[in-house]
Every structure is written in structure tokens, then in C-alpha cells.
Image (cartoon, rainbow, N blue to C red; front, side, top):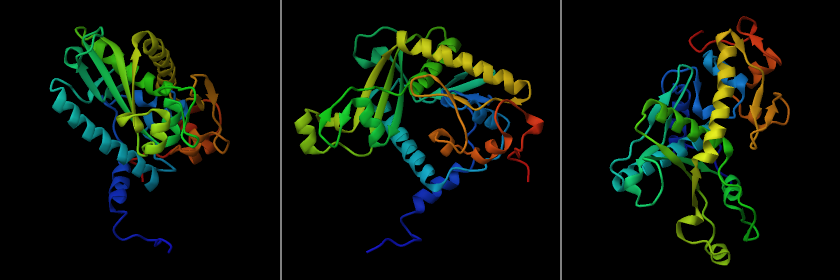
Length: 292
């Protein structure tokens, strides 16, 4: 039996999520750049800063994945508050050109663990099984372990930028550790979990504690990159199509090439029209969101 092509009931939550995704989410402090774009394409950040209208807006599948992540975030924040009543959520920070907000800021004194600093910053990432298995070092098909890669660098950098911003605005706060939480929607099977010695929550989630000596240098480097992007935007230019890969190395992007970043970009067609290199904003083909 084949599924119907036009569902009547089952798609309604996805439809609601998609409709919501069509309204752009403002930056935390109304800055042109956001922490969550760390490692992202400079050109894409420029389009967002100039309020360009997407030529390939998020589709229903993308909105579904993003929406599920939001549901988990909000539910988990409620659960955190029940255990750690002094926790703060969506704490905003930033500079004149970049801003963001963290998932949670929790006093160290609440945690019952011996770590330095006054607070820990917690960030959550929901993901598919492929990304999760890379982080924890699973070969799920064979039921074997391999080298765990840990959280994505861009996620650590985003959290680190949040931490630096919060401490810069609040001298009494000292953040030495960032807690990166990862969850996936498909748990490791019972049989493979027994074979691999994986128990309870670790079948579908992981928690990594990242020390300041690791996250701070990476966050500072990305802040310097963001300064360069902001300088180009302020001068009236769209930056070149440059991002960073999973290792933090420079990545030159080409729409229509083999870069997944371009495949999922909301400005792919526009970027192809504008061409490579820095583009003066008056020579761009962009249409602003509030224009007809």
C-alpha cells in the first residue's frame, strides 16, 4: 500500500512549523550578525545582514527538522528548571555587530560537581544518527566503536562566543566549562547496546564538558573573522563565499558545486547570479524582504 500524495491530517504540525519558518528570526540584540552563523558562509551572512529575500526559502522538511529541535530544546529547558531553579535561559549577549543567546546558564554551585568558575553554559544540539554516531564513535551497523570525534567545532565556537559575550557584559560571571549536549531521535538498539556496553541515556544522548582552554581560542578566532565580515558589510559589500569546514579550515564555496552548505542555502540562486568575490551591494541582484 502506498501513502497518499496529499496528506489531510498527519502533515498539520509540519505545515504549522513551515509557516512559522517563513518569518525570519531576529538576532538576539538586533545586530547584523549572529553567533549561530559561526563557521558559516560570509556571503550568506551578508545577505542576511542586508535583509535579502531568500530565493530558496526553507522547505517543509527543513522546517520539520528545525521545529522538532525547538520542541526538544523547550521541553528540556523546562526539565532543567525543575532540577536547577537558578538556571537562566536564552541569556542574550553581544557587541554592536554580533549577538546571540545561550540555551542555559547554570550556577556551578547547583551542579554538585567540583569544577571551577561561577557558572557553566549549556548548549543542546539535536541531530540525525550519522552526526551523533560520529560524535560518540559508533559504527551502529556493526555494533562497534571507533574514534569519537566529539561535538562539532562550529557548535563549540557558537557556545564559546556566547560565553565570552556573557562574561564581557557581566564581570561577576566566570565560565570555565561549556556543556555540549547532543541528542538523536533513534536510540541504539537493545541488542547492540548490550554488545557495546552502552547503557540507559547514552543510547540516544551524549554530554561533553569542554574546558575554557579549548573553547576560548576557537571562539576568539571566529570573532575576528566576524569582524572582517562586518567590516565588508559596513563598507557596502557582500563578502566572498568563504566558510570554515568541520576542522576549522578555510572553505571556498561554489553554488552548483559539491558543497552541502550551498545546497541548503536560502540564497543559492541569488549567489549564483551575483558571482564570486566581494560584490558591491548596489550591483547585487538581491531584493529586500520588505520590497514587492
